[in-house]
Structures are given as structure tokens and as C-alpha cells.
Image (cartoon, rainbow, N blue to C red; front, side):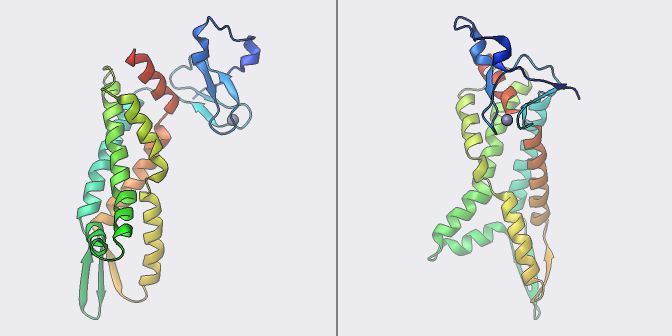
Length: 223
Ligand SMILES: [Zn+2]
């Protein structure tokens, strides 16, 4: 992988207002330094000179792969909701529960708000994000024109990203399990492992995703 130095706008003199080059201006997402990015070749990456944040890293076939990983995540999420998550055995009693059971337990009581929040943050928002990524990226991975409202859908997917908390849920569950392990014997169901796989795939997918390339492709193909 080669590293391409982004060019500072000052190195190229003042931007010409008649030039469409203003569209090439990119701000570093971490420190706001402004760069004029030339066309970065596929397989190389551009880093911020000041804070070394990766500005763009276009890769061959990335959109198809992200769409496929999002599809895998969506299937795993459905498995994670309906399959048993935990099996507790204490004093001869066996209690098996899925994520759906947990949400439903809280649904008709004073904690209905909690049930809605759990369902939204752990299941609905991550699932909405996976489906919107498929909607936006699958047509582009195939080289087609973007789907209708693709820009708005991708903007929404980016906005709900901080609110998709499947990984935080797994950390919370791990902490709770350590506490409960002394009281009852417990075994982890398929849904737990589906969640773990989901979190890992989401991490790989987000690492693979070059937002700048996606935005540029969306704008370019929407015209
Ligand atoms: Zn920076």
C-alpha cells in the first residue's frame, strides 16, 4: 500500500473561483485541516499531515464487499434476536431467554421506555443501518446509478452510527455474566455468538468503508 501526501491548498496557490476545484477540498475529520485532494489512486491512501488521520483510502471492490458484509450482519442480527441468548440453570430450574424475550418482559410494565430503548439501540438502529448501507452501496458496487434518495439514506446511516450500540451491549452482557456466573450455571446460546460475530463484522466493515469515496461516487453518479 502506498501513501500519497495530500496537497495543502496553499501549495497550489489561491483557489480559482471559476475552477470546479472547490469540490476537491476536503477537511480532516479530526483536526479540520483543509486539503485539496487530487485523484487518489485505488489501493493507496491519503493521511492528514497534522494528525495522521486517514482522509481517504479507495479500494477495489470495496462497495460490493461492504454491501455483502452489511447483508451478513443483517442476517446475524435476525438470528441474534430470535435464537436463545442465554440458558441459566439454578436449583434444577432451566431458564432460556432470547433478546426478544427480554424486550417483551419489560414491554408491559413501568419499564416500557427501557424496552423501547433497548430494542431501538441494540436491534432496530443497527439493522436500519445495515439495510441502508445495502440499499446505497449494492447498486454502486454493481456499477449502476445510485438508488433513489441514496444520498439522503446514506446521510441517515451515518447519523445513526453512534447510536447503534450492539457492541456496547456485548460488553455489558459480558460484565453481567461474570457477576451471575457465581449464582447459577449458565451456557451461552447461538444468539450470543451471532452477536459477537456481528460486532466483529461491523468493525471490519467500518474499517473498510472510505466515506469520502462513497460520497464522491454518489455525487458523481447522481448527476
Ligand atoms: Zn487532521
